[in-house]
Image 1 (cartoon, rainbow, N blue to C red):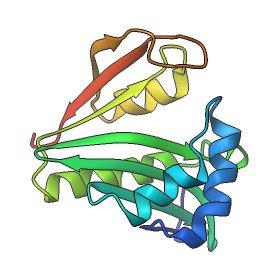
Image 2 (image 1 turned 30 degrees about the vertical axis):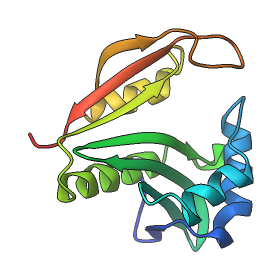
Image 3 (image 1 turned 180 degrees about the horizontal axis):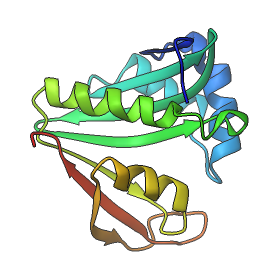
Length: 152
């Protein structure tokens, strides 16, 4: 479990080397540095966070806040630091922040076979509301669309 040595902070360009390393270790088709730079520097809808463990980026999350919806786009934890509550800490902060900013719900997509992520999201109250056929370009795999009420 995470302890006092974890801080959740806004993602900065200086965090990108660690964020990119975690992204590459976590996903078959990782976001690029240009993708993250755009989210940090140019996208007014983006809300990007890092979890620092003992001062080092150990996990991150990226979301969009659009009207009354928060769309969680990316959440990853360094594989050597998984199962310690970092994803839960980030998701807790995202959901509280979305609620505080007037979002009524959160949505995200997840691979059907990603059991650990699905268990995490279900523990936070997300439920499957649909499918996105062929969503993942690397495999042609469908995505599950999950949503969770934030105003409950």
